[in-house]
Length: 79
Image (tube, rainbow, N blue to C red; front, top):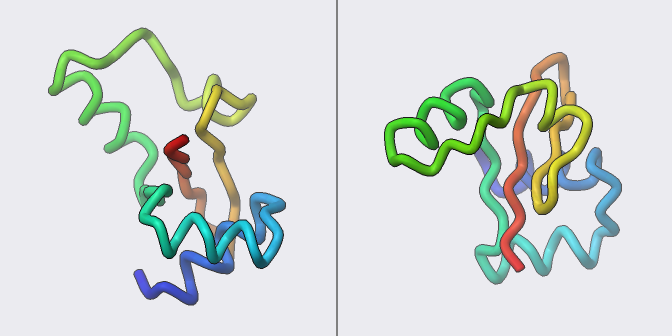
């Protein structure tokens, strides 16, 4: 996924242009192309706390789900 594509996904999540640049420049965001795969990764690494895709869609701290160009992405922000 290109940086420009990631930037546009962050804009879809209501980040300002400045915020999106900041997150990308400081590597403070990870965008997952397959949200279900992200949940499986949590399970595989014993970090799973019962989160479901619906929980992420409703909004969990430091996470967001965004629909962009017909595809759903999960965004994990780092503080």
